[in-house]
Image (tube, rainbow, N blue to C red; front, side, top):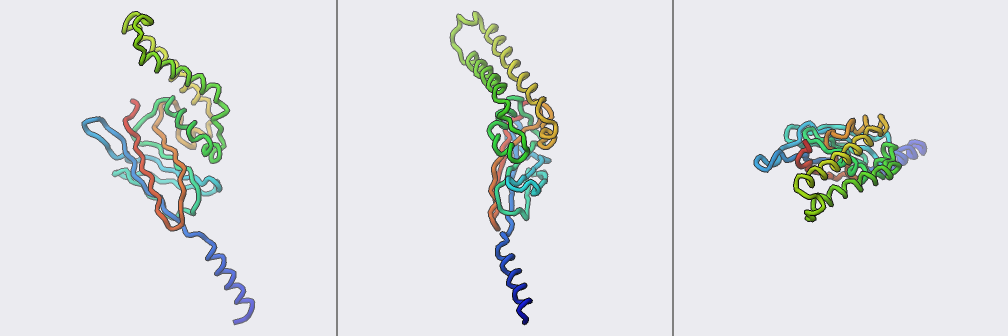
Length: 213
């Protein structure tokens, strides 16, 4: 065997040994129909997996009739998992909370920084806190009657949900299209930071709970 061929085979061997073997992501997605029926599979949920480090690496699938999903041949690394429910809906404030909790990964993957809206989000948070304070208040003198109390917290609830919905409507259209969030009252979303390991199976189950409406 000549020297040139030997060096070529050695290089191929080194490159092959340095290449990490892919992993797998599996999971089950479900929701709660009601207290009597209990959990049901969230069939036709949309499942997207985005690499945190390489924007060219993305995967897409959907859940089957049993709510199961599986993605194979995934290069090892850190990923953002985004699952859009096929059956449940979240309120505008739920969507804002969810996006804020995953702001870093969302900015990295989609380029949208929700923290630039922190002033508006803080105002909405204050309204929600006011709503909670009215809800648990036992000071009957403040509201004169139960009816007035109900009217008060319903008014505040409507205000912070309208503000939340209006804020979501102002998100960049390309970002909304990527996560399928087109209005405040849209399908529930699940975000998760996932690590795929070499030749390992990572499992991520999702409970979307009871739908908002």
